[in-house]
Length: 375
Ligand SMILES: [Zn+2]
Image (tube, rainbow, N blue to C red; front, side):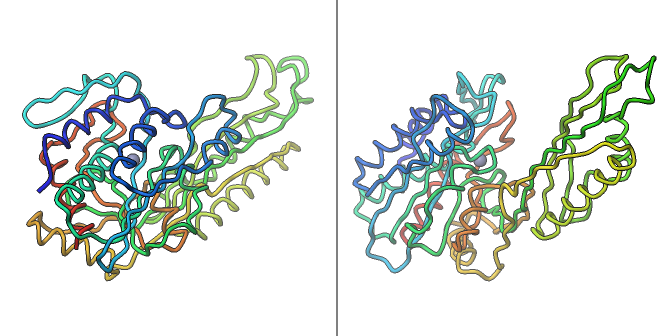
C-alpha cells in the first residue's frame, strides 16, 4: 500500500545528510518539516543544550523531536528512531545495485537509523493520503543515541501517553526483535604512584604500571557469565623509559542483563585495585556511571503479541525474539515504564563501512509500521 518510489527517495534524501552524534540539526530540521506538513503536533525539547553542556560542545543539536497524531482506533503506540550515525559518517554516498543500497565503502550507510525514520514518515504519508483509520501515534525521534543513548536519557517521558513502543533500530531479517538488553556501566580507574629515577633511586618510586598489572592479573575479562561482559578498552600512563611511572589511567565497561550484578562487579573490581594500590603504598580513584539500565520484556506482552500478529498478517515469517548486548533508546523507554521492543528495520552490518539495506526490506518495514499504526 505504501509508495515505494517515494520511500526510496526519502531514504536517499535522509541518508545524504551528515548527522554524526551531537550534530544532527540539518536532518532534524528536514524531519521536523516533513512531520509538520503531515499535520502532527510537534515539539523539540532542550536536550541538545543539556548534552552540549555535559560534553563541552559549541555547535550542537537542538534536541529530541516528539510528535503526536490523534487517531480514532483504540490503541496508542510510540514509535522511535534516532537521527545520528556513527563514524565514519561524513560525506556518505549511496550506491544502488541489485536492489541493495550501500556506500562506496568509505563510510557507514546510515540505514542505522534512517531506515526507521524513512519508514515512519512514508507510513504517515500513506495514512494521510488514503484517509486510513489509525491508532493514536506518538513519535520520539532522538539525537545522540549512539553514545549511550544520551538524547533519550534526558527526554521527558511524562509526555508519553502510550504504554507500547516499537523502536526501529535492530539489524537483521525482518521479524527479529530484541526483548532483553543490558545495563552498561562505563568506568575510569586512575592509579597514583610516585615517580623516581629508575636507575638512581627506584626504591623511592611507586610504580603505577606494576599496580595496574597486578590488579588486572586478578580480574577475569571478556564474557564473565552468560549475562555479563567486562572489558578494559584503553589505557595511558608513564612518562619515559627511565622514570618510575606515577600515573596510569584505564577505561572500560561492564555490560550485564542483571543491573545489580553489574554494580557488584564494579564494586569487586574497585576492591582489587584498592588492595593492589595499598600493597605498594599507592592509591586509586574510580569513577563510574550506569549509562543505560537493563530491561526484559515478557514474551507474552501485548507489544510482542501485536508485532507477531502483524508479521503473520503480512506473511513476513516468524518472529525471532533475541537478547542483545547492545543498548538502544529502548533501554530508556523501558526504564520509564513503557513496554518497548526493538524491531528490525532491515539494516545489515550497521557500524561498518559494509552496511547495507535491501530496498525490499525497507518497503516491508514500512508495511509493518503501517499495520502497527492501523490495526
Ligand atoms: Zn541505531
